[in-house]
Length: 322
Image 1 (cartoon, helix red, strand yellow):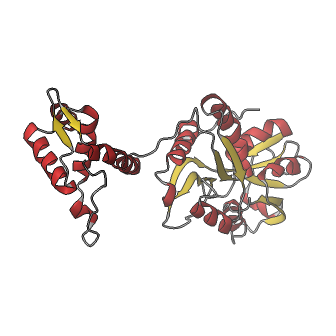
Image 2: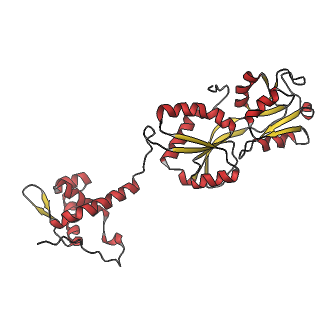
Image 3: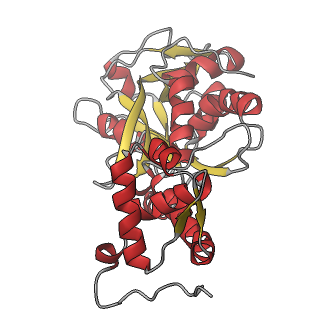
């Protein structure tokens, strides 16, 4: 009675010199088709190549493996015992070379996105409306980490994506610009010193509110200009959130510089005037940032593609959903 024990492979030699994956695939295909011609056709092999491969398999395992019949071939008992582990091994290997995909309509995944308060106001209404239509099981968690927490989160995967005005976070990070943004001043419409325009000299006289969301670079960029020798503006209030600048200037004589998209949204509701700065604040890029480790992650790729589709090359006027 033929033995059903799989031949022991000598462990002192590298496995790649003992087992040819092409031969294992040939074995699996012959076993499944029971026909050498059909197996060769499926694998793109000539009949002589199939015969040579089968000969090597027989030599490798010390068994006939397949016996010719009137129609095709029949497996030996040893081949029957071999097919399950061989097929499992091939399936594992195929899974390592076939990249997974992200099925947005079916996946239930939570993405953690770092963004500022302005980012929440600009991006989230349109983003969530889009996800409700195409990815109803996707959940978004928004975080506002410090720079150190952002770096650690992107590196570890605790944060999938950062969106906003971000400086260089290192060589391991990828960055893709969405749009270019600039600052405008906001002041209440009946401000006694601001009538639709500002002079540079006025900036020394008018008290400022400066906003700087945690982890972002807005405040540093604005204050660098305001503290310069040509300006020397008075900063009376510093806050973390841009969203509170509008209500503050609406009820005081303070003025503040805010991103233009946000200014366009809050000005009509709070009776504010938008004023071009008399000094040159640096424009800034609103970008996406992610870590190299997750550059080819299907879910991360999909989420970045959504942001590009919805917000690439954003320009004023931009209607924010209410």
